[in-house]
Length: 148
Image (cartoon, rainbow, N blue to C red; front, side, top):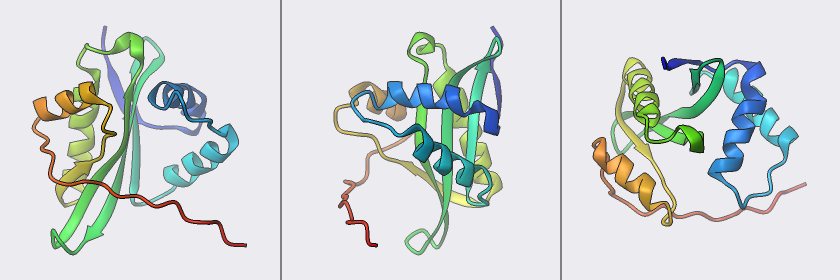
């Protein structure tokens, strides 16, 4: 089966939302809030969203954010999400999506690409290491209170 990788379209969101359910199964997600984020990303100059399509079905999704960065004295690409449908994993789809997102980063003059992955995602860690990614830092987060 041939995998087509293409830029996301507005009409792809429901399929992508279903992939998010696989990526974050314990997270209660608000469809409309995520749709608004998706719409903003599609029109953003600093975000790139791609899907993998096989037999007219979206089987993977990957997103990239471009960041101006002092540490690297230039642009860094950050992979925000990568998810492949559970029933299509192990077929090289994730690697093809990452390869395409790296091409996009290079074409936008990024000199490094980064991503974060939760501690419990051991299989994902092995995947990233197998395609040349190295663990170099901890990611610290802090929720911020919404201000009215």
